[in-house]
Length: 183
Length: 412
Image (cartoon, rainbow over all chains, first blue to last red; front, side):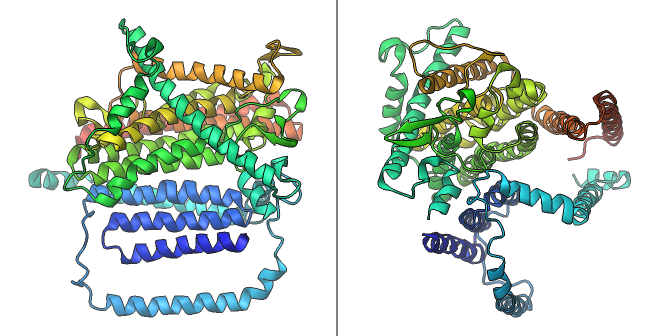
């Protein structure tokens, strides 16, 4: 049963990933990304990490890809692109080299960490003891005790990013006259 | 395999003896019943809304098809089925066909986690016995419970957004861009007021939340102090794109909004999804704040309906409470004028989100003081003072930004 679920969700993930790369229409690519994210959420559920699955759907599928689509629609780049023309010649060979390197890295990590994964097989075992909220309790405990500094630093980083975006996007008074003329 | 069933359907005692045929049949039966209830309730809701609005506007409303016009929705549905199905030439065909289902399916999915009945009195936990198996009167009770409802409502935005975009014309696109911005913004307020409920009850599962609201004093509307409920109701209305937040389909500005280009059965799917969502959201509100299938009880006296057994009585209480909220939504529509777009965003970002966050912090402080045996008389005024200072700072920031905007002029 678990194998069956894994095969289905893995097929979803791979089909979505291929769609992101191969579809020429940006909106279709973004939708394929949603398929991938859903596949990962299903995998989380089958590993009994329901909280992560819910957050995966709420944050990634529900907010981030929606913002992607929002930007695609607002900028009006939602027409299929001609993939024959290439603005930067070096881009494709570089992408191939980088992705091959990334695959090598992933394979190496899996080969290295296979034994330790087997050892920690009972990491999020929640259904066995019948505790409804053990999942959330475990995550909360590790976020707010062991990794509290990293967690807080991440939130500061996000705030800095938001403030930076606002500062960059804001028009200064001296720019106003120029934009007024061009408009 | 049992573990997987547990993680999908929650800690339901139905699967304790392994996955056998009877529990499987019970689950299939539940799915069918929930689906049929959903469809029939939607049909009745459309009739109810038209009839109630007609009453408020001094008209008669639908009265020809069936007794009191009850079958009007059915007649409309049959008419829509037989209409010509148009697909605009400039549309994106695949997405155009997909979009109605993307808004129709989530509307039904969210209904799966609502406790639809059962006996929650005396710590019974809503368990009933069907065909010799103990189970709950809800399709699924996943451990993430209410987060599932939140996830589904964040998925629902896709249907509207893609419908508008794939139509390939201006008005639907404007409608869908408005919709996605509105739904993403209000989801933050929705989630934060939900967090207050989770903080008070200490569980995410819907049956657990219902179980903790055993008397009128422990209903979450009282336990969380009304504010989260008010914020939840407002942002749920915005999330549903119902009046006064229906800028998505503001007919004076955008023809029909995101569904302008849709006709026939595809349009009716959007229409059904909208009403289905209203029912689901009312049921979620009742589950979270008003004790779901719990009867009204003050102290030790319970308002008991005689001659009906307790688990069936739960369903009656739930229906009664949901009807109140459905009526409130209709009332909103009949009496409130539509928001302007900047007012909508101001309300969401500058008022609802800070207010829900502040109230959540206040509840958390109160809870912490309770756990650590601190003096509430010191902790509460102190935390209120801190939140007040934050509020003053925020108002100063708003004033400064308003002044800047005035001196620089509008920049588009």
